[in-house]
Amino acid sequence: MEYSSKNAHEHEFHRNLVCIVYPGIVKNPDRMIETLGGIREISNTFGQEKRRLELRFRPECIYSKPAFGDGRPATGLLLKVKVQRRKSQPDYRSISSVQIMGCVRRCYNFDSLCDFQQLPAFYLPATGRVECLYNEIVPRGAHTSSPFEKPHSTPSFIPPVCFSRNDSMNTFVLREPKKPRKANPPVDGCHRRRRQKHGIYHTFSLTEPIPEKATAMALNMLNAKVVTGIEMEQVRHAFLTRPIWTKNALISINKLECSSQTLGVILPSIAYYYVNGPWRGTWVRYGYDPRKHFEARVYQLLDFRVRSIGSVHECIKIKRLSRAKVNYRTADTVTHYRDDEQQFVNSEFDEETVPPYRVIYYQYCDIHLKKVQDMLKKVPSPKSGTVCDERNGWLPYRFDDQCRNIMMEIVLNNIRRLSEEHPESYGAMESVEEEDDDEGDEGELSGFEVDEEDEDELEGMMDSMDDSITD
Image 1 (cartoon, rainbow, N blue to C red):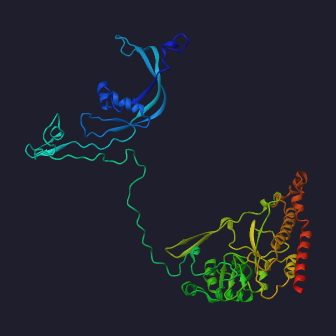
Image 2: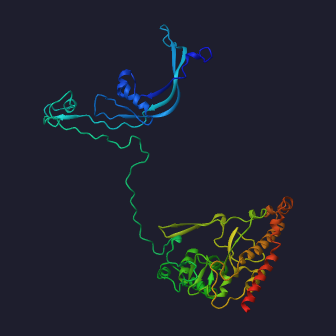
Image 3: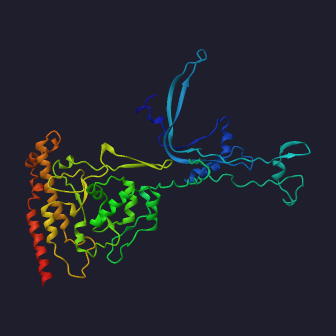
């Protein structure tokens, strides 16, 4: 029966109904209402929005634990459907009319678990059977005697109010707590690269003294780890000629053939490591204090980052970190490098250099550029008793920015030259000039053409420092 203006009066949309999804097959509606507590209890529950509807499958038993139904807002319709049947055709069904009896605004569902049930049933030795003693335990009618005066044959039955604290299922799985595994005894000479505790990792400070000698554990590791005398002598000689090294520069400049693990054992016995400050990331020979030596300015660290100009950034790849896996059964370390990359790169910068990575660290003494070396020589010597700066060391303010501009200009020129000589390898640079002219990005590249003004400003600052020192 379709809805139309003619039969609209037959539908009762104004009636707001409440639906109860009863968890059972209803054969007797009166019995069903009795399990829900009766009409009065149901009405009281409907009048309180947050109250739960109780369902007792044994309403006559006071020890019955109820199942609770939660009320939630709902949107539904109660339909009255009339179906015609024929006795001659049992499978024949025909809907003659459909009428809307009301709108369902609230629905009660019994989704929670019902509590455990305990019956007042006991084993009676006299009869030899388990019998329910509910009538003997629960008094009926008016009793003049005290409830505590009862036959000794009647047992006490005092169950708890509820057996389970929750009526919803828990998603976690109960299991025994994990027991820590017993650590195997360390293999002689095997150590973890990233958990070295025998080195001295020094934080830069203007007041704290520097380490004078290696720790006892660092010296013991030389005996535990197989280190040849030739490798030890090469590293020791390198620190005698130059007191401050980065690990990459130590291997690439001195052409050391020892592994990274071996060098990690030798270095803590000869030098200490600066965690931060102007000499961060470098190993300094024990007893040498760069804060008191003005010539230590050339060993300060410069982090050089290739700037994103045009498509220059795409010509230089991102450094991929090597991944080392330690086989603790054999105490061997297998290092995997992606794309056949070398473990250490060239740590020197000159007029022909194109950095292999977008971020790379150089010491000023390894930057073989005439402009940078002249700037280092022009830095005025400080007065006696002067201490270095906590951030810039012995160099003036913005000295590192000036060096980066000079180095970036050389990198751009080298990439342009290589793109002309090897267009198949540096094809990304072909359209840089045209894009800069079309889009008006000349200001980006022209930022390197005014480096002379910055250099003059730096020289003027150095001259003023010279004048103040002579005065």
